[in-house]
Image (cartoon, rainbow, N blue to C red; front, side):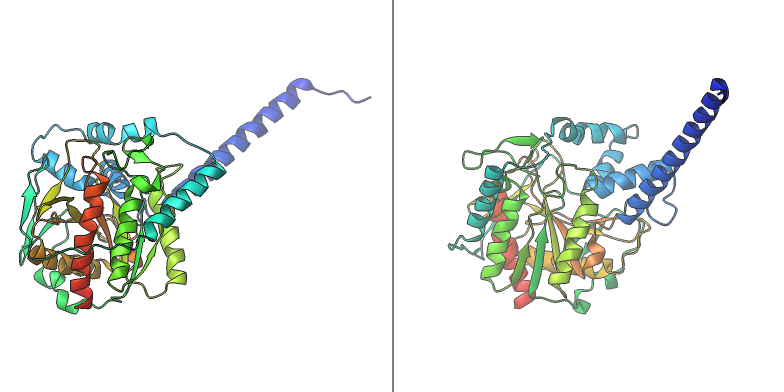
Length: 380
């Protein structure tokens, strides 16, 4: 007969369970940090403490936030960065609806919309010799550097000398363009022509009414000028907003396999401020269009980024030409510590098109002026 000591067996089982839990969570935390490093949230260098790491992580997720931070810091020493994030970004997470999979009919509708936007044969090119007027905004523009009339907002500790801005040394593939969207669901103030069902605050799954629609129109415009354009409409911020840049990096890396040698890589965004009164705009002739803003990443955050100076030269070249043709079309270039996947190309950039107070019509209209400027810089 075998006699079991229940108490001893129970103690041993409890000990085994505790050790297993400790090993599991240690492994989970290690792999979480490793994943964060892989997608660029944590750099290999010291980021300067918890508060700097938090600001850096937010900056990775929300292009343009450092510009807002700097503006706030100049007006209030007691401002809490958490209040800013909660005010502008928390509604996105609270109101986002998550769907495991699109219904088949929804997939067909989105595909039809995307196809229709890409097959529009009527291409209206921008005119030149038009008067321009910047419309006053609730967020005033500020800048730290001025290079031959091009304004730059340096959000880093890097010293920017005139040779960094020198566009004469810009050497890129001028024919091929990749357009994609890290925050694919970003939308604008709805209009009669472009109503939509929200999946979050100024966000929708309807590609007709997001920055994807703006990208489609830029695609049409650039193609009409002879550029070879590939426009990717993959959702990167759905069903999860966090990790968007890691997913969009994988998309661009795959695109570069099928489109090798592409240097011009445009991540098209809409400004993150969720406020209908914020609508950065410029009047060109009789038309009001959304203002644009370059966001250029650097290696100042500790991640390797050998292309940032070339990317900046590209942005400066485009903005200089835009200042000649349509003064005020662009807000000052924002230079950031984060790299935003721009290490993948020699003319990689974020272009923010308007803000939540703008309409899709205004944002699409600005693309014809951007396309003409790009054509003047790269093909003439």
